[in-house]
Image (cartoon, rainbow, N blue to C red; front, side, top):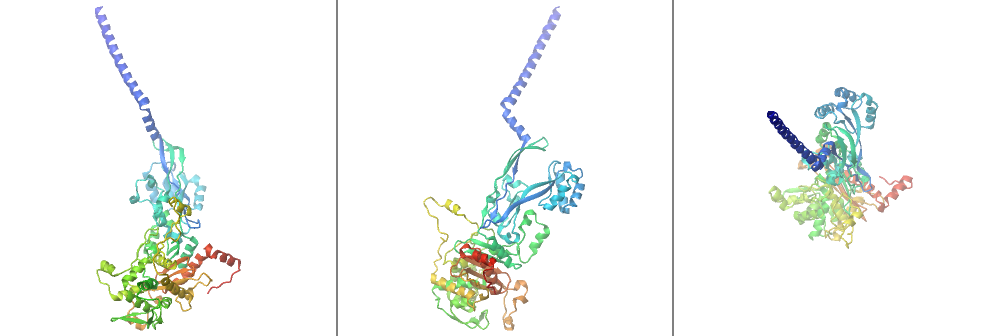
Length: 635
């Protein structure tokens, strides 16, 4: 009996201990559950939501680029993208075979798709082709039942409606490279493009916009179940340029197949209305993915279609440089406006003979006549009198030999030599004969078409240091940056070059004679409309040395020479001559004579510019011509 009682007490103690242990375990479990579900509930709710909901960036529409008249130069258009979802396509090879019968699908595209299919999960879409034409989209959609897993997505892509005509100006967009990554998650999007050149590059941050956001619910494998919310991206800012696309297109058309450039600018504001360079390229090809064959074609072209010759082409300015030499001479006080030189066709300096382009000479000429006839001997003479340092100083005041700061990448400075420059660059002394050569814009002297247009503009506007610019600032933007209580500056509020007006008048009379006197070098390329007369200066720069033997037997004509040995043709001008509004510079690489080749291009482009200027009455003339009320006065 006692033994039974002991066993009962022992069992009771064990049961009590077991119950206590269970109670302790349940208490611990309850405390843990309380901690997780009450105290840490917010944290774990967030973690669960993060696993269930994915946030995805949405690429914003890129801002448009417009010309001065609101024409789209760079826009966005629909991009039809063909995708395939592997888990819904039983046999990828068979599906690709069927697709290749409906759309162009190269071997490279096929290999890429198969590679991406192997790397991606079955529910992740793989891009087969982008930028499908509407006809291709229609063929795919009609055959959808036979193409399991194939879909058409609609996105946006950059589009350049003017193609070659604005390629160097606008530039293009392309895929973000590893070097261009900045940590911005927007740059990681496969479809995102950034500016690679031209205006697209300079204003890239303004044009990008702000990313949108999409919240999607996914399962444990990452497959999208549904979209919970969506906020579209904020489009990039619009960028308005000073360019007039009608003038730009005209300049590109007139250059045609030639290798050259045209620059047109407002002489009072510095706004650039045309900045054409030929040959061009298709900027849309870079956005869509340039082919190897097209890239090789561009790289091997001796006329350098990828170079913006208007700002990066550096050429000997030839006789157009005589304008800077004339002003340097007059401002030095060593040469008066009445100074004359007798041209016999050559000038002797030591044992070296320097020739004029006119073999028999021009006779006696003053400065106006020397500009009109482009007499080399006259400018050899005054260059020798004033020296290269004075010439260089004036050339730089007119905008040559320096980067002008146009809002485009790749601008080159050119070269305006003097004694110090040669010593620093070549470690050689300056020779007197080099001054004579520089006096006619040859030798070491190099300039860009943009600089030559700026020089013409500064001469035309009375000696104001206007600076060329492309981005147009609207009046309300001007007011926004003016401090309270201040007045807006006038449009031509640029630094004065402090050149005597009477000296500028000598140049302007000479330039008027070049284009309007029957004996002027560009008379045949004059503008005949009254009140629209052009004043200019021709230039022909040599790219090869003409030997004495060749001079004695007869200098070979340009058309008899290989293309790269022919002279460059140049022309600078402004119009209207008596109330200057626009300046222009034209260069045709290896084109021959400036009067025969470059001047007619400048005339036609300037006419188009004046016709589009409301202040000049040009649009009225155009309307009358279309109505048949004006007479043709062409050559």
